Amino acid sequence: MALSSIPVPCLGLLVAAAVFSALLLRIIYNLYIHPLRRFHGPWYAASFSVVHAIISVFKREPQWMQSLVKYYGNDKPIRVAPNVLLSPQPEALKDIFCNPKCDTKTTTTVLASLARRTSLQRCKVKLITFFGRHSAVLRNWESRFDAHVQLFIRHMMEHAERNEPIGIAEKSIEVAADIMTMIAFSEPWGFIADKTDQRQILRTWRKGLQGLVGVVLPPQATWAGDKIGLGYVMGQADKQLAERERRIEEEMYSQEYPDFMKLCLEARIDGKPLTDDQKLANVVLLISAGSDTVATTIGRVTTPIQYEEVRENLPFFIACVKEAMRLQPSAALLFGRVAPPRGIVVHGEVIPEGTEMTSIPYIVHQNPTVYAPDPEAYRIERWLEGEVGGNTKEFIGEMKAANFGFGMGPRVCLGKDIAMMEIYKLFIELVRRFDFEMLDEGRFVVVGGIGLNEDLVAKLHVRVKD
Image (cartoon, rainbow, N blue to C red; front, side, top):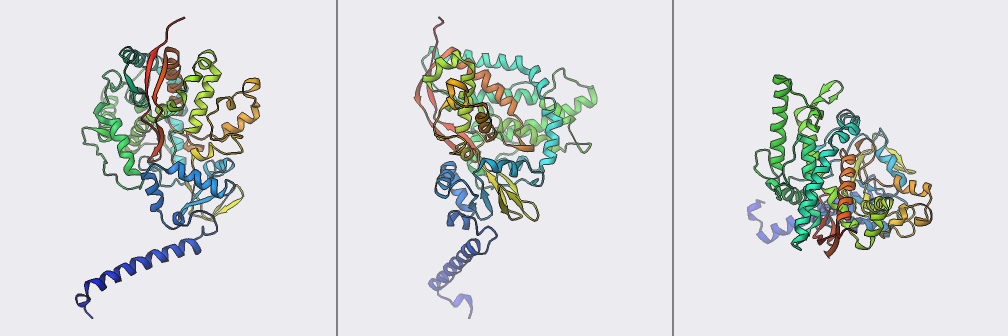
């Protein structure tokens, strides 16, 4: 019988039946035949990968995973996608992220396209380009960081004098972006000096995160030839890398204080220089991913009742930062690794080979055992010893061991030390010079795996000197 002779309604029914059968077979396979069938988790997530992407689009990823942990418990891995296991136990972190057998990174993270290399290679790049020399690099650049923070404070003074509400998170991102471009290219791009989002880089970066949640090319994707956004960053990075290489070769160019671009040019993997793509990826990743940590952390630090204690007691301030980063990690994405051939044992559980093993800071940082008795509460004292906090050094050490907001193992965040320096320098100045009148505490959301504070608005009031 010719297809054209089949009535349209019948043809529609056949197509619907075929689609339904395919979906049903997929559900049956994933729930009853798949190697991960014995692990608990919601049937809809275990059946279809698109579920996770849809939840991410609605910015409910951490809350959804937290609800799964509360329902299924935190003692065993939870199946959150057909081939993905979420391990909510802090004890599982080292088995997943510090085991050299788990060398392959999953491609489901937001920045995977910028960091597709084995962890061994990435570790070598980091050791040679930055971590091996980061203390000297930071010392050399610290005075310039300080000058930039002071410039930011002067601009905040102007807002305070005009009694204007400001988006604190957005302004903090501009400071971080300037410092990151300064480290990458020796000179800041003027986010603070010009009081603007240069080339809409920050806006398009955040907007572009929306498209990355499905691990597909985002509709807001940008290209190296673009005049705005990350496309402009990529183009400038590529251009400046080429120009720097030319100057080194033709003019014997040297720097008293090497920037990150120079360190990338000097880096070697197995005795060979980085490829052009690797150089570009490292520079772009430093700028784009390094701008949100400061802004995300500030959402929890700006709690007015704590200010006087912060001003009088620096350890209390450091505890504020730790607690803020615990509850609102800027890297709230799924850090994933692939189980090696013949599988692996993670915290007593045998994980089949090829399985994507993952964890998420937002979940681990609220573990009810490690952060008892109030894991979801913002309680600064938990990080303090003795009479003030009541915790022992050993217990605080356990909390630190469970904290992996910057990642863990050979893939630990490239700019961790820079981010912490920015946070401490910027926040101390803000707290020392201003009182905050919170107009809108905003909300913590995760977009494309990146934690953000949306609509955090306040008025700053200059403190009267005693």
